[in-house]
Length: 613
Image (tube, rainbow, N blue to C red; front, side, top):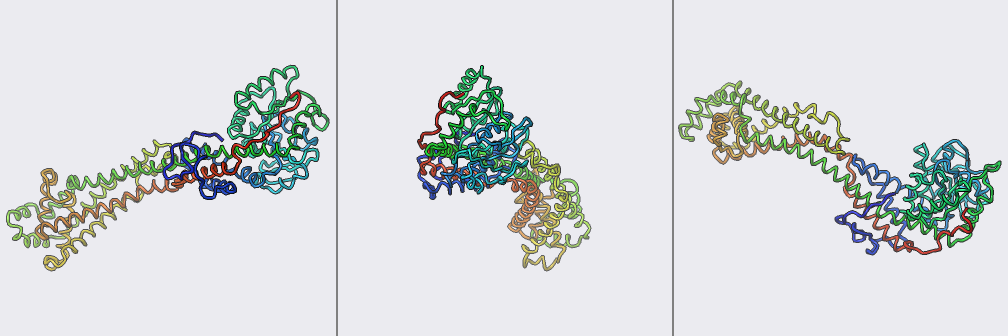
């Protein structure tokens, strides 16, 4: 696991978790006393399990790997080890391909328990060797619970082959892990998982490969989380032993690993059982025997590695919380790009109702035909009070065809506008998402265009609005005499006048531009309405009809935008996932300090005795 600097303080976070620093000195949250560390870790495990990183951001894949590694470490090591601090010390033997790990394990336990050979990879499933007295602990499955226990070798990398060896001292167990640089992806992943579950890493490399990049990457990771490490330099030509050992020691010191015990094993032969000569492994066997016999030293190793792993959680989870916040921010940004595109479409419709553009062409021709322009404007010379009846009578006497054609022209003009703004909004939203790394992964070609049934829905919207206008005219007319005298056709005609007026201005007070654009149609529509209802009723009808149309348009555009927004809703992580990760990590950090694990002193790993070679 890698660590990052602490991000800025999260809004609303508890005082135990200032984002700008460690919460060491903060007040403990409830349940974070010394005996609350397992509970705090369980809460952190739940928060990590709930965190999702579905959007294709640069931080997403690293965050997913980090979350998986953290979950494995909690399940495989931290929680079971905290439950049993006195459990046997687990030594995970790791290293590069062909380093001789299995041969070394067999030699240390004086039995051929792990397959060794020239074919790679040799160790396909991990092998755990322990004293018979300790086998019950490892059989229970609390440690590495995701691995199936077997008593026979297996090709399944998710199985754990348990072997007992009486020659291995009680209190100590070896786990022969797959190669860290295996050509098999699953083996490499498992090797990393097993190393994270170790109380002690026994890292095996060779004279030919000790400077390889992959081992040093893992060693730096181990140092970052405070793991106890011992090194074995295998297959060293005797004549070059001092030079190579000195160089490796310099490299270890440069990486702050100078305190790691180093054992140098010379090139040698193996016996008929594939075991190294006793004199070659004797210094390492003696070192492990002393460690196994010293309960205090074993406990110190456990505490060192346990506290190192716990200490690394806070900065690592903080980086994870930051990645979770980036997911939410990206989802919000994608949503805003869509909403901006469809807000623009809504504004275009509103402007179209204000600037008179909808009165051009077919609508204007049908309106002039409907009201009879010459006759209508002659009536405007008389007082409105005297011409009311003449206007109504003229309108009620007209045949139905001009009214139908006008209604159809209005519908066609509005539908054309809605199709145009919907197409433009879809294209803008698509382009905006395509330019965003998270949006590009959510797109499909159909989103670049309006819904297939948009035209039908737009036509239905306009017809429903037209019916609504007629109902509005009826309701506003109420007990006015014109409704009783002129019957349904007057309502239809007046409704059409309302529709025409809505196309021109909000308050229906025509400007010079509107009169010029509409060739006087706004004045005509307003005069019809004033002749029947009066000035205040004109404003009421106009505002209500316009608001109704815009509400319907907004609902249509919202449905179109939802094609995008549902995709971010499905991918969006919980809005408080980052905050919950931060709070959970803070509770663990406070509980760690209160538990007494943090900074515990002890004898640590014993130093190698005698000549390390």
